[in-house]
Image 1: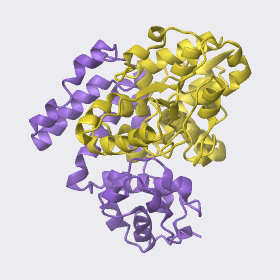
Image 2: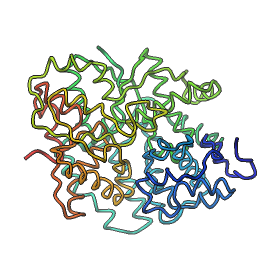
Image 3: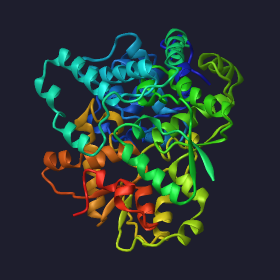
Image 4: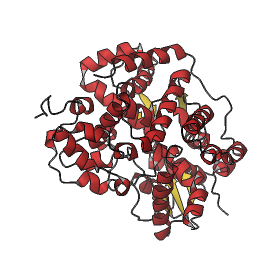
Length: 189
Length: 280
């Protein structure tokens, strides 16, 4: 059984592939969640909101960005509801609609910088990611402390041969760019 | 034995000590690694959080490259990568329409038939008997807390490896090499994974619990098979100690480090001297 289209107006069920009607609110997902104690809306309640046609409220919860994608909820659900997949669907829709809460913007900023980096290089160039992310974060929060925080780590990483200036790029970067373009434009369905 | 190899970004970046370790250990056991040509990033958490199509397409491009180059098996020592590859595999194998669509997106035919293996599975494939025969320095005195983290065993539907609540594959291997793995509670709890930069507080909190439980069960070290777990438990350990005012001083080994030591490979060749926490 699936939720009716009018109830699930954000299409969470379709995007996640989880059958949300199966959830009978036992709370096992929230009981095992390592982030539960710092969440505003617990995982089982997020699913309940979607069941009740209030996906909009779920989408605006801070907790979907607190989630560390450890998949414990999905692994333990007695009804095989892919709760972590629901989190992903809520995040994607919140991101696309610009509905990310102010307090969690930093997480999105990081993930966006990560994807931009992979789009340009085909592989992650860590130093570039750290630089771009920290600068973008600085322009948001103006925190010099956050900007400089890990700078002492650089010589330690270098000493261990773990710091790569430049870093790797793939040969066929054009195809990576085309894959991103195709997914970003028709990826909503 | 030769096996296809997908290093992933971490192993070619700041977790290159893991690659050194895997290569030296498997090399000693006569397993050659053939690196996938022009592999791309799997997309990791960023892709599956922000764009669900990208989360299939990026790993699928790698699976398609493997198929094109005739690789039937692919070792991905990073559990994030191997989970993403396996998840794409399952989705593609189950749905002809998705196969067609993704093949067009990644510009290569992909069918979800490549066998993706984590490091522990490759060790199992070599076989404990073959490894034991080559042991020159048994791991006597090591009391490792084997830490699996999240994605080696979860989600079980996709990765289908070990028991997702009580895994024991690393304990079996290390016990056979002479170590005495401890029984503890945080084997499969999350370390904070890729939140290291975006939400450091979360990583410090979660990793502190893991280190504390290992210490409480008298572990002499922690063993991982994941680059992210290693960063959070090893590189961040000094920050954790400062933040919580404790001393953990737990060396964090990759599984291949300890197997390599047992096989008599020098610490420097394995790359153990490049960890942050080193044995005093």
